[in-house]
Length: 398
Image 1 (tube, rainbow, N blue to C red):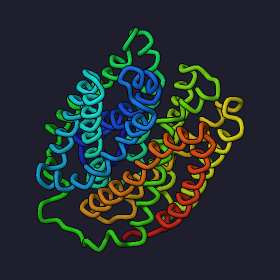
Image 2 (cartoon, rainbow, N blue to C red):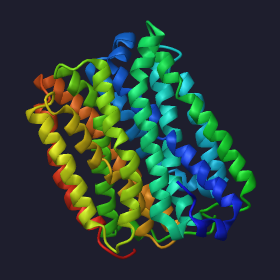
Image 3 (cartoon, one colour):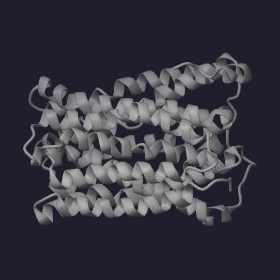
């Protein structure tokens, strides 16, 4: 994909390098999480985790994103956005190696640290987009979220085969591999920060926003919409392969189906924010994408194995609510500081909502012995998501 011509004119070569770095960083924001689901059974047998503990492991990203996200604007004001993202990426790279070097405590500590790094970048990337590419919010959001989806798809597809090829305990090697693209992203981000003269904090020390902003109905709509779609997404990442394996499919096929589900996001994650940003309101997009997810879960409920590929595609289409919400953080706000505040509040509270999904799905599966109850609960969440999307997608800025 080419860099927007007006971005080159406005910011010069430094902006092109910043955009390339943003895309490289985005590749690492879900891959370390997406790689866990396909080898979750191997992780359980290798560490002695129960089903409930495994559900907690799949919920760690959302819990950490909720806790760390609120601190991201403070980090941006203290270190500057560029340095804050650099520090978060370094933490992520180190943690991805640490989490596979020991038993379950090390796994959990490393996972928490990795998710903390991802959480900070999650909040700050929309701020970078608003500041440096405010005239192309939809296009740039589409670029980095499609890169994020691509990284997730690759991780979902190749982690299980890598683990098998590595032999006994190979899941450790398969998960450690995802530190390599993170190191590449760190190098590119540092190079971009040196070339780009605009390295001052995007959220400046004296720049404040009205705290009453977080009580605005649209902010609540954004928060619930973001939380609901994140709950669905992380439940899919953590448990979709298990649903397919319980339906009689082998581990490799189940991992490939998860990869298909995520891979659908590569084109849709780019197209959705670009097209949605062209209109003053985005309600139709919010409801339409939610409907695709409803169809996918309904299919899993009645014929999980027979229509496995179709359900994966529909769920992948439904996951395109993620780039829609990321673009809404910028589209509904009028300044980078406001974007940072709304993004931090919305993502932190939203991820707290999302953390219920993987844990709840695991506990319901363990209690009932089937996936019927978890899927029915997820369908109820999608109804709430549609209502919140109607509120968040209305036209105008805060």
